[in-house]
Length: 116
Image 1: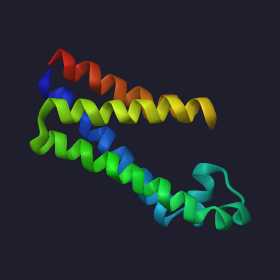
Image 2: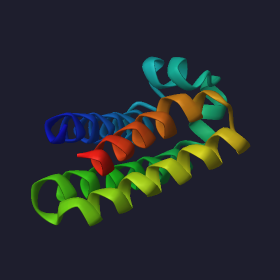
Image 3: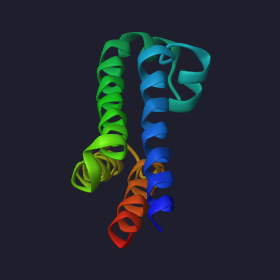
Image 4: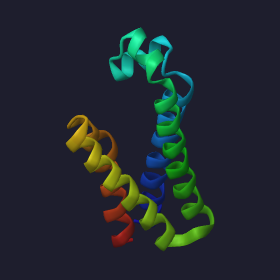
């Protein structure tokens, strides 16, 4: 069960690292525009905001990896909780899909970690 918790948490961290790359480096590129359904004009106008958003996703990924490597369960639970809150907020303000892409994997990892 512990191994499953580690794998799920690592997957959430990798997902947020992917968000960092999309938002900081690919926002105005074809892949970034496709993923987020952006027009070239909107992508260009919002790229600084997206980069900031990507940076925060990188902090979440780093915190989760820190929890797995050195911080232990309390640190990992804290950062999983942050991801869940961000996912719920994003689902409420941006789109429901965020609930399933961001919050659900983190909630699953948190439940498994608590049961481990």
